[in-house]
Length: 466
Image 1 (spheres, rainbow, N blue to C red):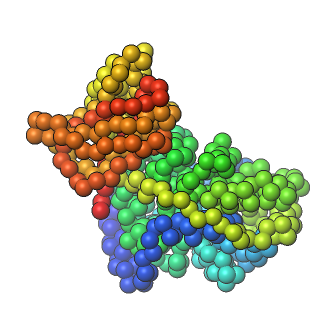
Image 2 (image 1 turned 90 degrees about the horizontal axis):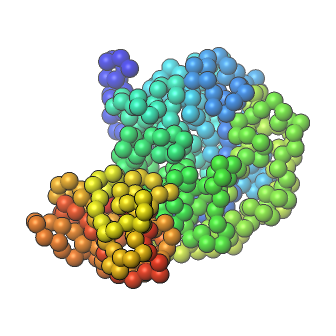
Image 3 (image 1 turned 135 degrees about the vertical axis):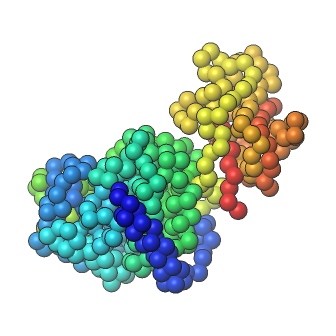
């Protein structure tokens, strides 16, 4: 970006934050209450509508002309009416997908809907229609942005400022936003880490503007199902092979699936059968709701900007079978989300004898699919992470490959000596310890009792803002 563009972005961000402080006078609700409210909503409409609608692929050409975005009969009231007919409680619109085209009146880039033949703010139209129909408003936003070259190896401070400015617009100009579904961030396919685009900064910005806006990152492809890593709601994309356990889930969750064969509209959608109401309600919607999971069904508007008749008909059938989340279960106790940078990631590791090739470096390689495995002959295994220098931290997470450790000790090394930190007896796969901040150079875990040799997928050390 040119110097003057960078300057304008800085000015815009500063002014937007001032406006948000004046306009968004929300009374902050505890996160656990917001999570329960989201689960209670039960059912919503995902609306994938953006420039890929006018192309053959869900991942659009990043250089596609805004002139392609030309709906002749755009009708967001029809979308809302269809959602109500299915007894949905909210909608979520793709404000910007992976190719970077913004369908709101943004000041951050000319690559937006105001430079299309439509020249109307679709986010505003959608928000007004859904609120008028008594439905809550949520928004989808992609961090990955191939048009603006916001992708691995190319991310600059200007990109971070653009993200912050765009999110500020979306959270300032369209009333109360109940949740942001964020995509293209620290997933194996996007490869943009929470360090490249700082998660805690973005999360804190969102909460500073709208404290009751839930942040949902679609990161279940990487992070384990047993804890909330970098998200307020555990989110599963069924089409990508991410399936919630209806039997064992204990976290506030979201599962998403398109009613058609793809997320964005395709020419065969009007004539191709959609997923049946009976299957969606009986096999997904009702059992998901009983497993603390909200189900969001994607319905893709066509190139005229309307939902096809076959989808409208099936949504009405859903409404005859599903009368809402009438008896939602109360969420059990669970740990709050981890949102801070992992100070242990790829730092020097040491430990007792390992099993074969699975040496201690696998315990903090930023991959939950690999693990350090203790050798079967070691009776008192241990592993430690060297942070490189004395650093403040107040949280440690231990994720096993499979839960079998039942007692352990956490120590930290400070001023040339080891000091006890926590005694642990959590039996779950993910063990999270929060404590008053200490300063140390190393963190060590000593395993005392276990049913089989410890195998540690990831160790996390965090200095949380609290």
